[in-house]
Image (cartoon, rainbow, N blue to C red; front, side, top):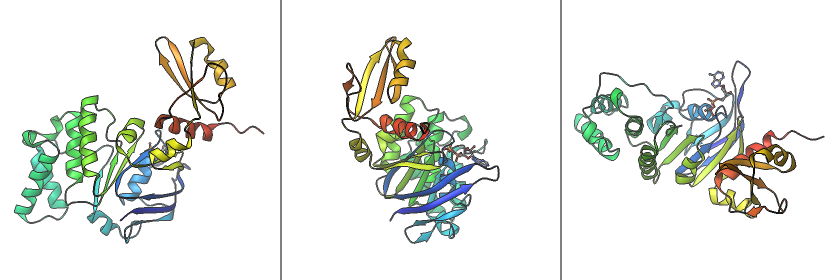
Length: 295
Ligand code: ADP
């Protein structure tokens, strides 16, 4: 099974073109949709989740027409939106039970079993009687995954799930995601390169509604292998260097700056060839698109 989308476009009434002819094939496993704020990620996620319509294009999940057979999609979908509300007076167990009823699991024993298994899987068994409103950020996101997994979905969508988590919480959340991504399609939308780096076997970079890169991270890295160059400079030389070379990123390093440049050949004396990373792919893709056209 795979999620295939072709030429999806969406223009909001205020004139923002949030998606422009987006085409992607998303197989089983973890798929990272990486892009800066405003790139169109949530718009795409909400379209998959049948919460809003695209203007044009097609999307199929196996043999389900995602844009037309919304009920069928919802039966196999788990969705963790960017912001999800909780009922302040319900504890985790009660809330999961409530969501399971909404999802149509009417058999009491079956529902109880699923809720218990999900609490266990997300490491929340010990906190099941605590009100979800009092959870830490990490616990809340794990609870979000638990509710998304009710009813054994085939497609799970998580929108910006690690924003605001501390490193330990993020790590725990990553472990949970990578476990569930083994047998189903999990789409992780994020602006955090590390999330994709750590977790995803397939990815796409989206910017201003357009897919700039798509593929396996290793393949994308392979395409720039041998073309990333690094140079350490004094801070006051930044503007000069940026004018002279196609700088893709700048990092503060012990009071100085480290520049990374994408170029076929060594840009100048002093540059060192370095192994590419996903950030290079991300920044260079965006830079390429933002670059003013020289007539
Ligand atoms: P991301 O999730 O990558 O941050 P979004 O899909 O939320 O991106 O937004 C893409 C663009 O569409 C942004 O410019 C945003 O301001 C705009 N946008 C999002 N939702 C709406 C809406 N309901 N009405 C009008 N514009 C919107």
